[in-house]
Length: 214
Image (cartoon, rainbow, N blue to C red; front, side, top):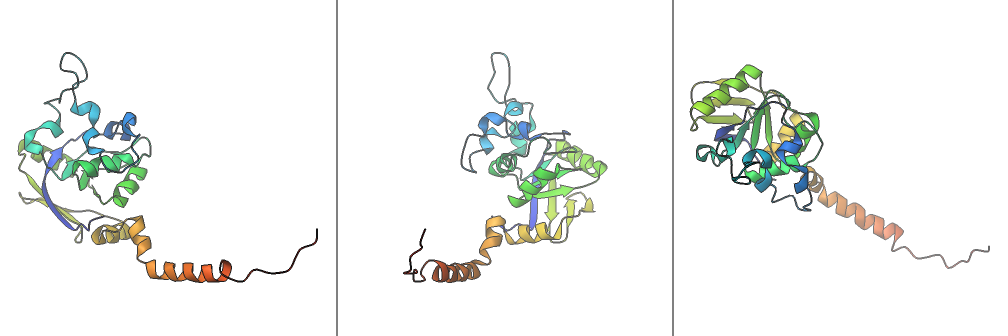
């Protein structure tokens, strides 16, 4: 996981409330065993025309298909983003597509945890602030937003600035690029020492030569 602190990017203004994890990554794409490759299927049903002669082709009206929002690192969403099932694939799809942060008024708890563990900054702001940033990004696709994780601030190139809260432990992990495996490997030397001691005591010790009567 890459450390992340200050992120400046234009944003994709999705703006929809109650986006559930089946909309983020539909269930038919959960058969992969890797964590990669899910970005292709992010918002699959919304990114493609569903009916008619053009079914399956990219929907030009969906925000992620707009050339102006290509390569955006920030997604702006509505309240309760990531609700529904607990699939971690939703976070994998967002990061694989290229998003490093999501701004919304609220997030589903399990998605919030999964996203943080996969290196995403989730910024909770009052609904009016989110609507303002979403509207500005719609009106001006080059609208630049800066998220400063260390200072816990979000600002834009038009003078907007706001503070956001984040759990100190999650902040520490994001700043240092530590997922659950990385956190464990900080103690690698002690783990190796314990394993060596355990092997010496329980596996390499001489076996008893006595017999047991039954």
